[in-house]
Image (tube, rainbow, N blue to C red; front, side, top):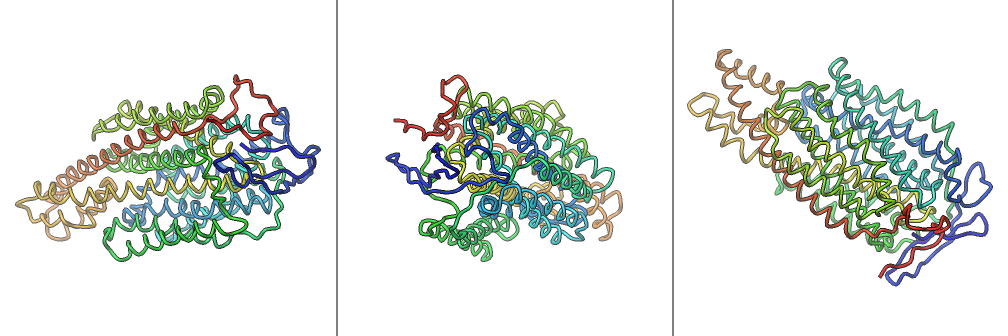
Length: 581
């Protein structure tokens, strides 16, 4: 990592690291309010109150987003039932926020660098809390999706500003420790989020999963305003607005096409058109970034093998995790009929292991290197996905505990290792942009995980359910239900009790007796649950393949981190790393 000494306030920023290891640098000015007594922190300065208070503020502020994610995930079945949302519609409740995060986080990182990380962070927290209030009052799924997108826009400002603030006060060889602490705090919030969301849905309704964000937002603003020190990079160049616009259009077009294919098929004009717009915008984005003087994403960063491999690993890991958790909730509540709180308790092995593993991963990264930590995490995920293939309709807590626990450990190791690899590969002067790239890729991975797995699952349901339903409905007046698109959409959501009740009432209105309607509903539900679980097994099998791929990619990461026993001097974080043969 290129981090160069400076004789005064200015510091060198490396725009690029080219294959022959030459480094092209341009002067940039890192300013801080209030102005520190030294231009760069030494290794001992990480022990100062400012660094730890900044870490505390970022952790508290991030609770807003993390609690929202866990609570809303558990509330998805209730939202789908109350607002009559289709599978693609309920996916957009989650993906709307993630899409805004993925499309806006990179320019938001640049904005955070320019206007100040503290200011950007506090604006993001406050705006997210206000949008959460609007989500709670949403009268329809369309309005809810719109307000979720607005939530994502403010979260896009919050997340990279927080990571950049941490990067600015912690030297490189201490980053694994800081990332580990942050990951542990985040994981604890993620573990509490589903439990809190389950209790709120059962006792107050799904709208309270959004209302609860408001007090957390106020707390985040208060702690951040008190604890954080302002820092910014003052630059004369104009922001890359064209790059920001084309990147957002590219991400939106591609994700829209994947999600829309569930309802209209891959051959429909609107799906192909969305995909085409996304691909063209992506090509334009690359051309723009190669030509502008001040690119939003310096493409030279991707010549660093560890940087590129870290981002790829991050994308694959969060894609797999989001796919597993999103549809596991529908299995628990729809197929098994558990309540929201019981579903959250079933997820505890995953969230608890995820809470414990980041600090352990931080220590292992310092001692063994990022590559070894990443490989260990990938192997845990592969075993977990293979064990998930044994899931059946009557599976209890014990059958879920081992695979989910392994998954939590594996994801924790992979996230810490990949994030450390990414942020340790770039200098402080571009910390906001690097954090923006990392957050954007992470949210894009979550979006793609839900969208791709949802499309696969809906396609499998559409192919398998009609034949399976005809076999049990042959000879009855309900044979036409096998091809009913609305029922198939319910099957893709686990065919919960609300879908069964709706079907029973529909049958009674069309002349079936209550007993006949009950028998037909039971037969359809049995087929629906088996088809859903079989399709879910395909998704988990693909997850095992992704885990193996991440293990192979992890071997590409250079162990360019600072190890506790490696004899690296404390001043070594000020020099570029030597090129490895």
